[in-house]
Image (cartoon, rainbow, N blue to C red; front, side, top):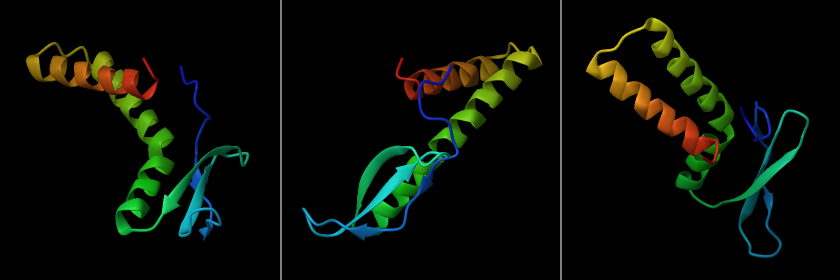
Length: 96
C-alpha cells in the first residue's frame, strides 16, 4: 500500500537556517530517516509542521475507517458518499 516512509514521523528541534535566515525543522521517520525540511517562522508554519508530521497516522485512520465502512455492508447514500471520499483521500495521499 504505502510507498512513503512508514510512521510515526516526528519533528526535530528548530535550528537556524544559515542560508535564508529564520529557523528550520526537519521531519524524520521512526529510524531517523529524513523526510523533509520545513521553514518555521510563524504560527501557521508550526501548524503545518504538526499536520505534516501526523500524516502517516492520519492516513492509517482514514484507511481503517474506509475498511470499517466497507465491512459494515452499508449501501445507503451516506455510506456510499463517505466511502468515495475516503477512497479519494487515500488515493491522493498515495500519489494516485
